[in-house]
Length: 119
Image 1 (cartoon, helix red, strand yellow):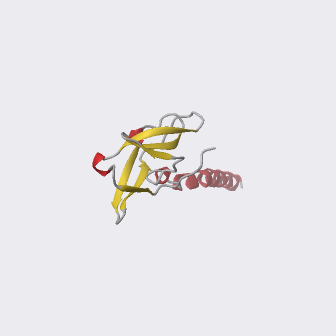
Image 2: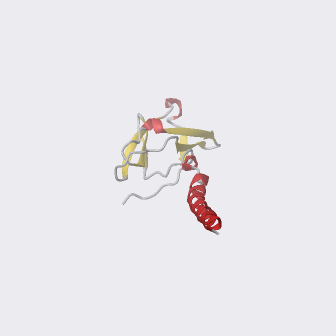
Image 3: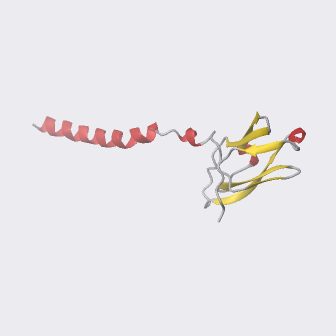
């Protein structure tokens, strides 16, 4: 009888541990990245594209890349965060500068990223 009690205790412990860890292991942290970054505004300048993005302290222009697609009107451009900002500061909106190809500066650009208002 003692054996059955111990086996039941170990089974309960194993179910509790695996029940908590398996759902967490299934979530893919990388899925949040390599997707379109939400922008809080942008501006085309002579140096490039100034993007307003959420940062917790470590966001740099090198954390982003752009994808260009030619359209009949010009270019569709998407800005994608390649690496997460792992700093622990409270999130704030910061402006980062992404250099643009100077040969495309007079073309029509359409930004495909989602845009939220900054309050």
